[in-house]
Image (cartoon, rainbow, N blue to C red; front, side, top):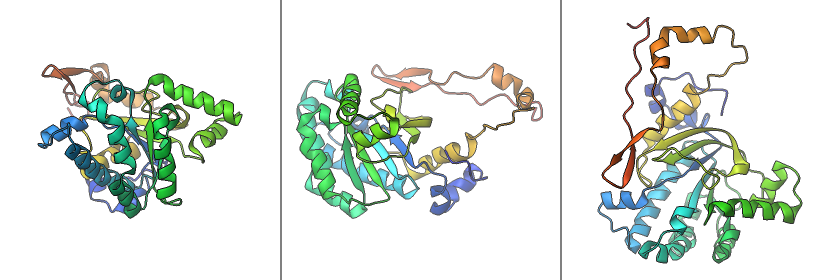
Length: 296
């Protein structure tokens, strides 16, 4: 995380020019969306057909383009996760074909080139059918670009470690940096922001263990690729302007909590939720903190 956080209020940050936002955006981040079929249904799209794939890709290009424009340089996201791989029914039967088209179909490659993105696929070794996809992305997308979209493919939680350990054995890597280069083919800046979906949970499948730095975590309940620029700017404002509270000399810092005694002693537990219908978890509402003594 940058140590040069802009001294802006949220309102000022939302209205700030792109150059100011980009100066404090994370160099590398994870976006782990979920609920893409939910987003489709809410938009009147059949989640079991090819229209869903095309619609989702258009949404993805727009949202990832916004994140890159606001300063992200390495964006990590999932092409295949264990939950998808372990499904049954129509979705699972079409999953591999959809992913291949999603990543390296003619329209996808044209979009990547048009946007000027390097695109890479990590973890394909766990799904040999994706080897050609990984090679095509290297061949058909720019070799030099300020923006790299990193897809990952993890059919199981164990596959993350299988790929990592095999790379260590094959390369003889003895350090973290050497192993990063063995797996990703280059040096990759560590991830400092994680944006997930719905339930606050993290695993090596969603946050690559080798690349996890000091990671600030956020979760949205907006399904699929429906996060807009205003909400992403709010996340970046929190990341850059509100979360950097550490200081080397903590003399008197603890005493600063006294005016907010009730807020700390009666504060909420992040992660508590409720059900929406029978199938969906949703975060429980959080009440604003009690007023400080100075505000009372």
